[in-house]
Length: 225
Image (tube, rainbow, N blue to C red):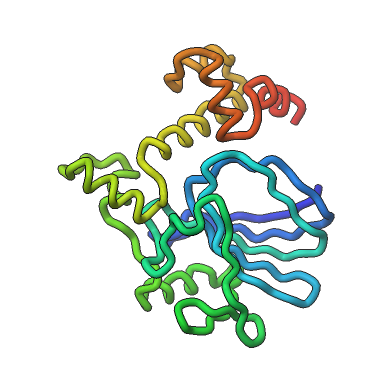
């Protein structure tokens, strides 16, 4: 296996999950589109660097080198940094300036790289210093709570906090749901109707765009795994 990793959920209302991994060899893989953005902390060959990554609006290729230790902090939908708009790193990643030792610069302050155990404490400090905030409208809408908010206002909040429109998010989530059904051996045509696609070609296009694989490839992979 090229990457070994462990993942845990978080008690923080700001964090979706924290993942800690090691790259055992050089490699690459097809990665799906990603609604959420991450902070990623990499240590390799005696050096460290910190990045802000995503969201990714389409599937693509992820590559890595051998011998890296990586920490991924995945933020919940609606969490963002006002001084670093999400739209500025949509479909890209931004390397944060390094500081002395194993630290980096963020909003004119030096921050120590977090680890798997203290990542929540690190996030709490970002919140306390008003670097990281949660948009309550996006948070409520993402949990499917009914809100009496004008559509223009809702669109503004989603674009500011996620870099994406609600329509785009729904498309990406629907593709993820369809892929999950196929991995559970649900027949392709049944998945089409279950998730609400027009027909199988519609499903094919969506999965290729957002997951990076056709329905047949997903089914084959789940059966061989």
